[in-house]
Image (cartoon, rainbow over all chains, first blue to last red; front, side, top):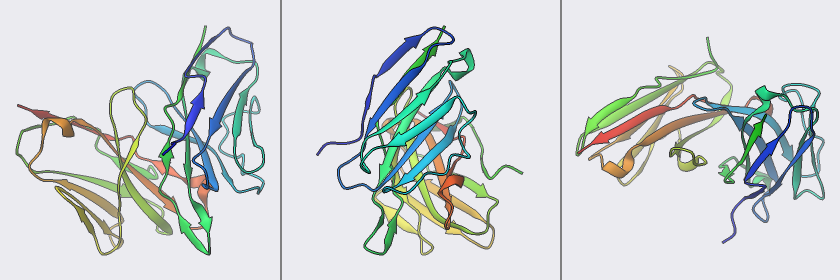
Length: 118
Length: 111
């Protein structure tokens, strides 16, 4: 079956430019997560969406980062005025989330978008 | 104290050995626990969930100790293909914004 997909797989941009990263979660998954992973580092939690509810944005590293999720499905992560320290792999994951009164937290990851800011 | 702590390793073990990793967490209200495997330059893949009663999947056994606030992963009869980084994940009750991955423990199985 189709897993989580992300696009683009690689993005090279110049410092100061805006970038938009896309995530298509597994069909039927209500929860969606964004993480970033710098080289040799652990995963840094960025933001979480549950269905159509407003996300908690407190994990976003700065106000240059924003994310939205349209129709409870596809999500985009936007980074404005990119900086070199934004270079990392951005990973999206989805899980069943809250469904039928149960909570299922097993996350399935997409292949990630490797962002390089020159 | 970090919210989730793991020994980064590397753990170098011979084929056929048994190896165990621990992961400690600081939030006693944590609800869900998982182990993931991440190969070099790949995304994490779910290995197994961790339940209070412990669970086993083939050569892999995961356990949760709420009193001491740690989870463990035991790998028996290590294979070369088990070489990877093993990440623990802790999710607190009612607080997805606090989803925390450990830094991961690197395992290298040697022929």
